[in-house]
Length: 72
Ligand SMILES: [Zn+2]
Image (cartoon, rainbow, N blue to C red):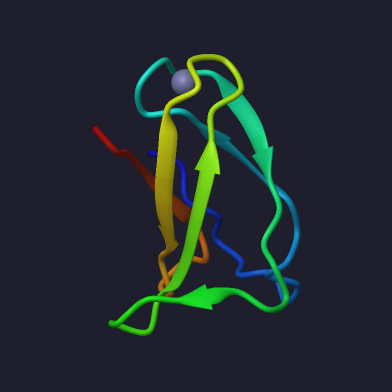
């Protein structure tokens, strides 16, 4: 697992994420007005373009990375 050693100031930079189901890579753009879940995490719902799985993700506040999981 690769971790950046320097935390960038601009957390709204697009990041490359992979579909947890088919491993397709796509670019994720954070919203400046994100939805928040009940724990206070930024919450996103998106669809994989390859396998059309609905994915839900939260942004890890420790490193601003999107953590995706597939809904069944
Ligand atoms: Zn997929």
